[in-house]
Image 1 (cartoon, rainbow, N blue to C red):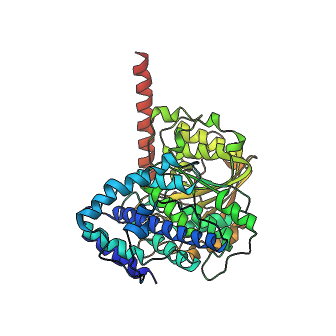
Image 2: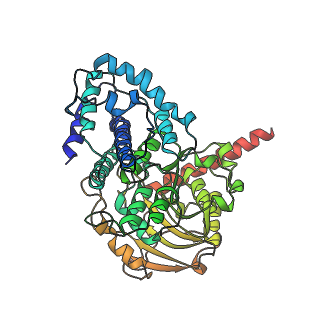
Image 3: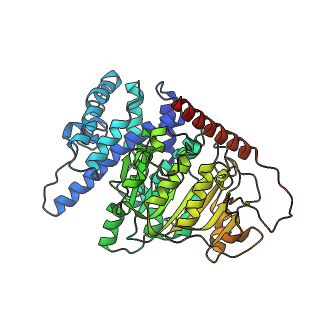
Length: 493
């Protein structure tokens, strides 16, 4: 129903000089969608209040409501071209009046968990990139034709928005930063099997794909919303899902904004997403009240953190993903469950930090499953990954490995799909062995290196050529360690 409208919005943005990339398209679509969503939400709340004989206290002041400036209507309910600003006047209003007003909600909000605070956060992080008020007017009219007033409409919009995120993620080498393949996320969630009343956390949320899919799992069941009706949940359960289930942090501005919009479209009205760098938190400051039942995440690959950030961790390393893994272990409650995507080089890196981190993971958590993902799982990212499934509170005794082989090369025209992961989910439930799955006892792992490399005993015993990325990764790690040693020596001179 709305697919053509989304295409038309992209056509307008493509002609706009201020928008050059898929990232720009998604960002600009996001702020307009957010304001249209707010207008529909307020309209719905006002109608409910009227039916109950109550007055509704609007969040947005009259002059700044969508229906006042973006889509004014005449007495017959038709778009009123006579009163709608356009051209330079529209750009001036948006840049000098609308955005400053919306940014001010961050200071005016009573609490950080309110939708008012989210409004201030969103508009504090993005800016209007339209340079032509005529193009903006065209885009606003298209967005106004979209509706958030029924669950069916929200569901379709969420699918279209997910497609935009996927396109944005596939547009460059940093694809994994914005988009984790949804079939992989769904398989991870099925294995973890979260329940209502459990808290779910992602400290590197990106576009909030993990939390959105977890919400669909809890709201609709394992098969998700496709062709199914919502589960019959109590009012208390629905309130729990809205306010006390999903928690996230995101460092970068654009993913933060997209993540909020994505969660809203999936049904969470005021997402508990903090705009912050999770790694600035000292692990020693984390208390029991700060821990979660479930962690689902795909932390950034290949980042390098500053020395002052590394001081927050017991195991010092510049590798961002390894710091996140320490953060996740510390943030899990006893008995809590996690599924974390990480580069496959984590399993075999020979540097001191990698060995120490593998040892800590195995001794403090039950690392029960390792899913070995094929190359091309993350389009544009150029890395091979594994998924670590672990439970905190007891040491590892056995690790069940599964080598995922879709039987084809993965790419933009042949991405990972749910069927590719179906056998993994089925076999994992009982840790069954097959041609592509096997179990390793902890006693058989080298207690010096703690090497967890994927070595399928069911395959012909040939010495495989090492992946070039593994070699490059080890060289980079050794370079970093040498640099740190030299810095230490200079400090003593």
